[in-house]
Length: 195
Image (cartoon, rainbow, N blue to C red):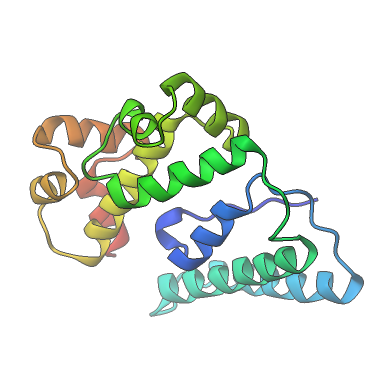
């Protein structure tokens, strides 16, 4: 048994979408050859992790981890029936995620999503929490922070401008939210990831 963790901002967006669509995931049953391939990919990630002096350290680590995630997703998709029947909770959660993808900069409250789905806020929360283990508010915050991290990493846009782009007129509130969710300030995140 093993578990891995990779930050959403380092994950290929296509893989993130695939992972979101297969939650809750059931255990993956691996044949010997498949296990060997995944083990080798994981070993490569660990070897690259140890080579912190490489000029392209972050890129190599990110790309190798994405390859490992892609391998696991591909084997998972082979074993599952994507056309399988979804529960009502899973259908609502999938619809919420689709709405979130397009509305996270304007809709910050669970009630806004519940209204768009023509269901009550408590029912939306029940569906999402049952399917993912997390509340609607958690998913909204995570989506906003993921985009903030991308903008901090890939652009020179100021934190104040990023807050505005993400729908926060109250810059201090956005800064506190970022720090609360990530454990570091937005500027510290940018500086840490630009080294």
